[in-house]
Length: 160
Picture 1 (spheres, rainbow, N blue to C red):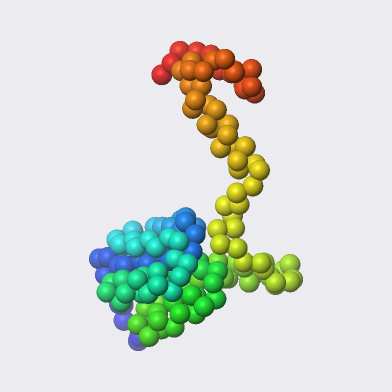
Picture 2 (picture 1 turned 60 degrees about the vertical axis):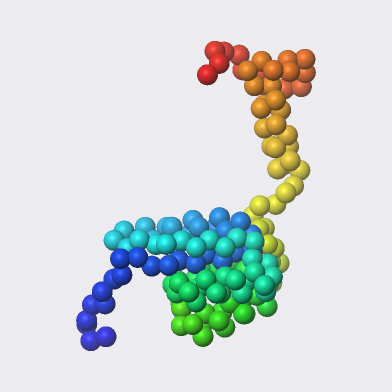
């Protein structure tokens, strides 16, 4: 580039493609965007992309509005199609979790066991928290006082 500065655009399209909620991508994408406060990202979030048909819709959007593509996709076939099409379109793309998983693999050894939305496991602890929330909402403001003995803690005070 011979030391020439490239003019930064006023905005750019940021495509966030996930086979789960997209929460990880949104956080990483926004953290990176914060480093460029003079450029406005136009976010395109595509959660729950789990089929080729869904991916093709995403790729049509990427073609219409070229920009950076960040993704977290477990399915190898869908991942490969996304990468191939991004190369054809000449748009930059990155698997956000791949470098981190590769680091873990190098340190821990063995193969990772990819799971869609793995950090959002629906286990017994999760369901206990949901039950506690439901119990709280149902008993808020003095409603259903007959089974308060089932509560671990009862707070009494002036209502909001």
